[in-house]
Length: 336
Image: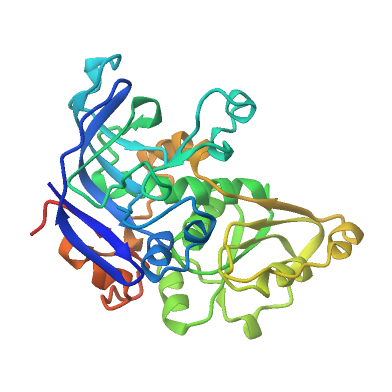
């Protein structure tokens, strides 16, 4: 079968690889859509921290945001899964450690990560194999595009929920990229007044087109009390800026990662009684994200600016494929 494989920094191509076989407890999925993520771009550039820590080595097959149809089931798997449309959790814990047993499998020390850590090829391929325990069934109202947006949506939902914001609250989101805009959508759905801060006029214009009329550059921010701030950027100075802008007694939520350490004076947290929350994974938010999409509470499909085939992935990762203002690129492995 065809799959996109990274063989080194800046080196990736569509290769013929063996079709996956469903091991006991696993299924094989025909991929309908897979999202290209910033993590994939970091693998392409060689900047991804897992490459330095040894968690990941080349060659690797990326892709962890996906939706598809189950076509084969291994031993011990209910055959009723075959033919079902699904998406899957990226984080696969060992199921036996203390963290897994306490419901925190997404931070299991020995976890596998689909398309990210060694041992679990990703979804930028015609097929992939995953444990049946990682699957979430998709209702008919959640099409393949939405299905492949569940994984990033789960992260965004958790970020929005971590703000604790609802009617009467004001939330500021740093970064009008995929995660930032989706977090803004979920916060808005919860009833909060949402403001978005970005760097380019194009991205802010796009945010306004999505209904976020409060979209600002940093130097344009109004002098308003923000009950929560979500940092969905990779800018090292912004975590500290979030603490400066949040109201005393408020909450700051960190879901972006910078390439260099962020300097944060914890005295500012203590003296203003601010709660800081870090969000790593979509895992605890996947089911609720599917429910929100199915109900139409949140519809992030406008964030997909282009759908390409596997042969275009290298250009996308290299930043050579324009999508316009919409930040997300999807891959349909069936396209030639």
